[in-house]
Length: 135
Image 1 (cartoon, rainbow, N blue to C red):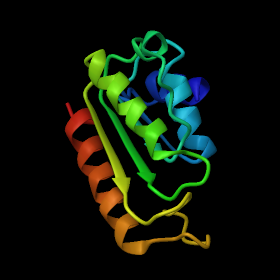
Image 2 (image 1 turned 180 degrees about the vertical axis):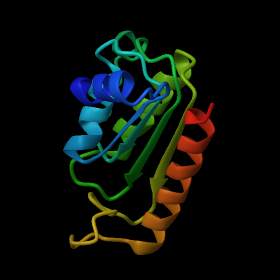
Image 3 (image 1 turned 135 degrees about the vertical axis):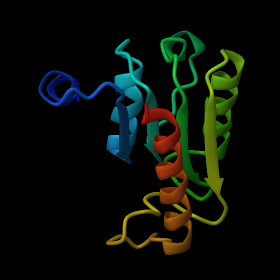
C-alpha cells in the first residue's frame, strides 16, 4: 500500500488518498491507517476491526466501515467496540452494520452476496470518497 501511495503522490501529483479494501484487504486498509501514514480516508468492508484506542489514535481522518450482523468471523459486538473506540478518541466515522448479512456480502461470486446492500454500501463509499478526497 505504501508503494502505491508513494507512486500516486510522486508520479501523478495525487494529494488526497484513501485506502479501501474488502475482507483481508479491509483489514489491510485499517492496518495501513494504524501505521502512522497520513491519509484522507479509510474504507473497510468487513475487515477485522481494532478496538485499542492507543492504536486508533494515529488516525486523524474519517473512517467508513461496512459489516454484516451475521458475519461468523467479525461479531457485532467487536464492530460496536470499534465504533465506540473511534467515537471516544474523536475520529469521524460511519460504521454500517447490515442486518441479516454474513461475511463477504459484497462479493458477487460468493454465497453471501447481497446486491441491494452492496449497492447501498457502494453508493455510501462513493459519497464518502467524494466528500473527503475532492479538493
